[in-house]
Length: 203
Image (tube, rainbow, N blue to C red; front, side, top):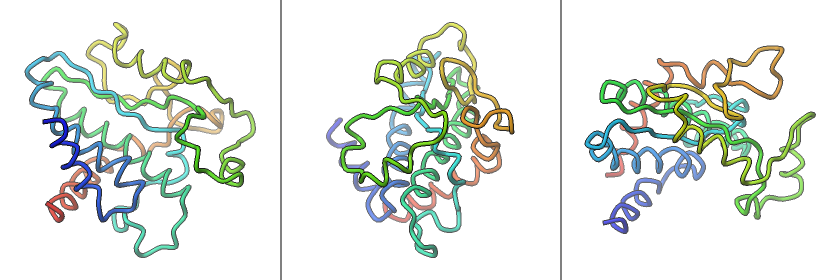
């Protein structure tokens, strides 16, 4: 059964810009497969990994595949991370009545093997004044907190970072916090509808 779902997810990701395909559409399809079991075992929690890189770009619903724009790998990554936060926002709205909460987590900047193919100039582009790189264990802490902390019992629809609920970005928060578009309910619903439309087109 797990292999069957993996084949389905890979199929759904094909034909899309790789970052939106893997980071958003693949997760969208996979999570949908879990919802019946989550409802049956409620209360339950879903943790969606996003990133502070969402600040690089909002989603462009008219061009998720970058067919009408010059491609930029960092903007594409940022948009895919915005998509993660929006997915969590809409999914929480849909599931809260079933005693299932959904939160988006920014784990922090962590250098794992995921970055093994990045060029030196890409790594340099990731650096920002005051940015701190976390060890993997520290980076995992917020994900674990989101999944099991009693403080978040029944609480969802948040952007979490450094084991606390994040705040909306403003001039006093240069690195921490989230952009308003990442948790915008209208934006989230529009992305959900667009994603379903795209998936239906490749089914």
